[in-house]
Length: 173
Image (cartoon, rainbow, N blue to C red):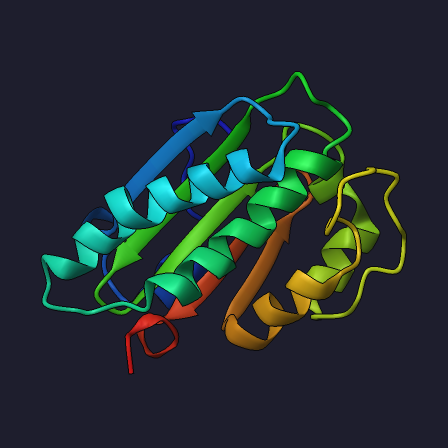
């Protein structure tokens, strides 16, 4: 994925607006060896990018819910890519009808066909990872994403995960 990335057509349709009406944000980050650094990246994207978009449209989003949905795949892309030198590329595609986020790890995790199948079918990925970081590699966070997402798509050729949330999944209730 590069910074000129185009959102796949079915995800544009999910956002229910013309592709030119989608607010797009793409950011590139160095991989980080500490979970708290991923949390900082997550919080920055939620507070400084996503929340202001929805605030400007009078939509009060559940920032805790959105942060969890963004943070978990960022962690996966950061720690499981198999290529610590490649940047982590995060995308947010926003409309008044929903949010699609993308995660490109620059490595092999999202290119793995078993990972693709498990994410898209919302199944537990049983392979364990050798990262010696507390709270990483247990599959607990993916359960929350699976439960709260409307669309999950992995472009294995590109190595990018997409998660789509309808507006009803992100508004504060």
